[in-house]
Structures are given as structure tokens and as C-alpha cells.
Image (cartoon, rainbow, N blue to C red; front, side):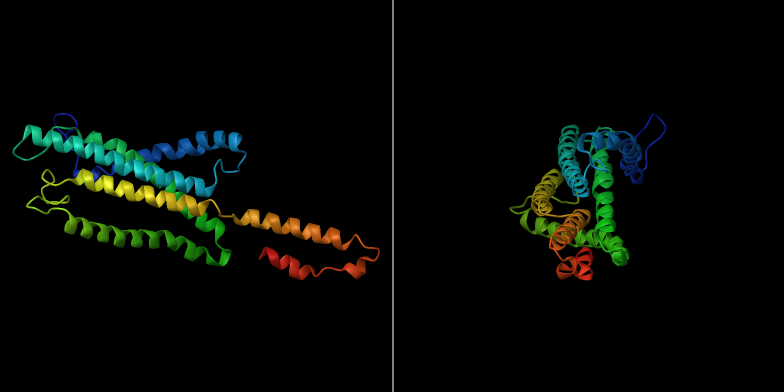
Length: 242
């Protein structure tokens, strides 16, 4: 792709990732100062949306990220093949990558930050350090799974004399198909996450239910003529909050 900005400057290939960081820096204060207060008024939730809803939005943005990447790659490949330049570079501006990298930044804003928030809020206080390490464990597990997916794609595609999807010649391969495959796997992952998140009970809700149970037990214990005959083992009841 054409990485020129003006006639005399060419963007380094390693700097393209900065587009996602720029979108993250723009969207983070917007979410914190504008969107979250508006959501608080609508949902009456202290954070606007729950932590799991925030993670779910992150998963949706990750699906959009790879889906848009596949569409852009289709256009880039068709443009490169139709113009057939000597270096194989498509006459498309590198800024066509901005939409997908914007979705990547939104995934980091909602998904990654949401995971860290969930681990720190829901784990016991003495396990906070383990909670913070889980995000890196997820990244490590995802790296191994991505290696497995790439190996399967190499073995399954590229038969009958045709190049595989991940051929070294990006114009001969079908990287767009690979992006769509990852998007399909992301949809399956989102469905699994949604099915698990539906039945999740947050710690603060569990504590509220325990307090209500304690209050009920106290009222039932004080309804008799002799309060001492209906004494409550408060230590056992308070233990429900642990």
C-alpha cells in the first residue's frame, strides 16, 4: 500500500500501529467524560454498563476489526492484481487501514480494560496479583491457539497446485479469507461468552442477597415472645458474606 504522506514523507511500516493508539487516546476520554455519564442516566448503573457488557462490546469490536480487515484486504489485493506493478504494491493509501485499526483501539478500550476491571473487582483481595496476571495468561493462550489455526490453514489450503491462504506472496495468497475465518471464530467465541455471562452473579449482588438473608433471619428470630429462645448464630450468618 502507498505509505506516502505528501510528496516527501513516507510513513514507516512500524508506525501504522499508531493509528490504533491514536483512536484509543481519542475514544478513552470521550467514553470517560461523555458516553459513560450519558449511559449512567439511562441505565442507572454506577459505571453506565456492567463489566461483562463492556467485555462483550470489546469482543464485538474485535469481530468488526478482522471483518473490516478482510474487506480492505480484498480491495487491496484486487487493486494490486489489476494494476500489476513491478513491486506488487497496490495504489491504495495506507489510511484505508484506519477503520480496522480504529476498531482494534476500541477493542482495547472495552475488551482489555474490561477484563482487568472484572479481575480486580470480582477476585478476592488477596488474589489481586493473580487476577492481574490472568490477562497475560489469556494473551499467551491466544498466541498458542493462533499458531494452531495457522498450522491448520497451511495444511488444509494450498492444494491442487494453488498457493495457500498465507502464502509468502501476499497477492497470490488469500489473506482476506483468513481474516474472515478469524471473524467467524470470533462470533463463536462471543456466543460462548454471552451464554456464560448471562448466568453470572456479581460479588456485590451476592453480598446484597446475603445481607437481605441476615435481615430476614434477625426479624424471624425476634418475632417470638422470648428473643433469647430464638437467638441467632451471627458468626455463621456473617460467614455467608465471605
